[in-house]
Length: 324
Image 1 (spheres, rainbow, N blue to C red):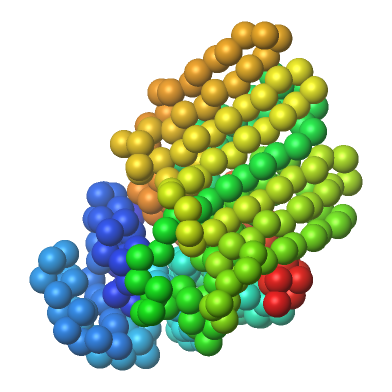
Image 2 (cartoon, rainbow, N blue to C red):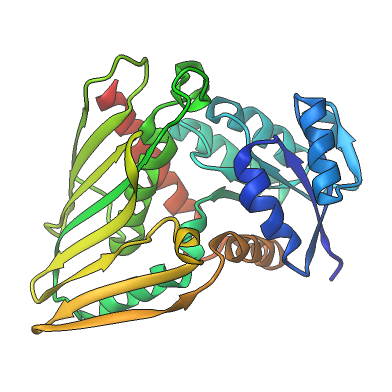
């Protein structure tokens, strides 16, 4: 099979620091093009990463017959337009989270991707780290009994409160869209249920977007869950689970790269404590591999299906309505 030829849409930090290096670490892919509204940024990316083609418009990159797949790293409100354009040009699409902010938009994108025979996937890289599959396996084995409650958290401190686009309401900003979506996604990954009731509160802020939130959810099985996120606290990215026979903690649930790409699972069962630490992998590389395999198989990976993506956006939209 020939190498998958990638085009990068947007010169965001996530592309520079994580996704472009991840693509270049796989043997089955090459980056052949980049497009950005900032020609200077695009040229610098091209130099730094040896990308041969620079386009001054997203349209030109999408229309290039040399590009097989695109990675979209744009502000949230721009995702749908450019994902749709890429799909209609028969390009496979890996789009940063949240892929869209309304369920109707995702249904349209998924319908178009089916029509044009391309893969569309939302970039929740943490799902592809082996610690998540291992944690889910342990829960199914009942090592902590029946799950009662899950608390999932993601916090970090914004440094530039005047210019960070994550604080721009016109670009789909807000802490829940930016990082609160991860804990929500993780809960659904682990328990595979849709909530029957959702409550959401935003902490006091002088910004036009949510900057500190907590969300309470309850599920048909009786599991209770809590998500909290903020732009104010030191880096925290954990999942804590309480069961009828024990507890489980994932201290680097979403950012295993902050621990040398190594996941950690600690669980207590029958008064014994267990540590699972040999779970090393670059989640971004694993995500790229999974996406490229999905293209080969013409089917999304089982650990992030089209239905699971839709569930995520349905709940995201519902929570945003409650917060605003």
